[in-house]
Image (cartoon, rainbow, N blue to C red; front, side, top):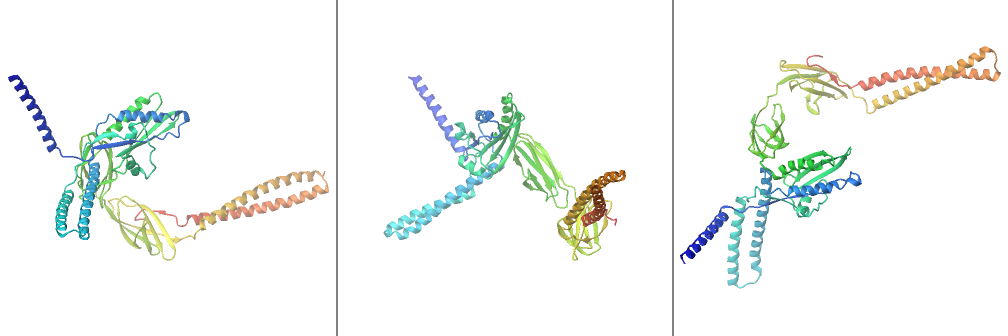
Length: 485
């Protein structure tokens, strides 16, 4: 009897401990949203492959499904978490606001339902209490962001699990495709023939970035298909799981330095700790009157990378720009004033200056600004009349026609000259007819006319060539040294 009592007490203590532990867990772990992260694998484009080799696409997609089902979770980095938080927050606010608006509208409609006074007051009191609760709920939502699961369960879309792969969306329809598939991302790819081997490329699109965030490719033959897929799938699994994201902090001088990471704004002066997938990132730092800086750095999984930047200030030199006629001065395409003008320009930098006058004259120069040892300099610019539209084309066309006429008349003169020389040798022999003598006389006229035409065409061609060189060289950009005229 005592043993039965002890057994009962032991079972009671065991069950009560489990129930207590379960209750404690439910109380200490608040509910989260977005507890699942879905990926959709699309049908890889193999249309460029020969008909007998297109089945490689289905082999690769099935292999991907089998390998990716080994991923159990997806770790969200800060930008992704912020996106899902804001989306869930907006949905919660919208739902709460609609419920409150509907309840307020219901209260207003009670006035026109013709209820007895006692029933009307009771219903109004009930609705007011509900409005008060809905208002408090809306304020609670406004003041407290929803909790998003930082490590949701990773899974493939239902169609992928059935080994069905939809066609990849066209450009601009990626987000709609993800909504239709109820997926957080999709994987697209293509397979092309490369001298008898396969060139396989993959790219990953995510909803929270609205862009492709990862691309990779590999070249393989049919014999090393398995090893090649292992290599690229391992890299893909690291990206999809988000395992051990890297953290980056950047401190820079001066304080107003604008920092870009992968061409996205990351802060000014000192950036907060930002999370990025492991790999190479491109950092760009710019500040007014300072030299810009761009470089790449490698991020290791789970590491905190601290970057300290100090931009070098730009040194300036004063250059006086003057021209033979006063006019508007342009630095590149930017209007900077009227000549004469003193410009403050960075040292050791290639500059393009243009002057346009009111009397249809223009001058351009290219120069290298002096180094820091020279504090000032001057440039004197010559201006020329701007050629009329089409003047260069017309001059070039006339020159080409003159050159063609010279070639044609020259060939005619050469043929007629040697033809007459042959006929003249017959005339000197004395054995010829009157008809042959007349033909020889006509050929003499042709020869002389061809020689005259050739001479005229050659002279005209020289004139047109000089005109073309002159017209085409007008308005050319001068290359000068500051301080030298």
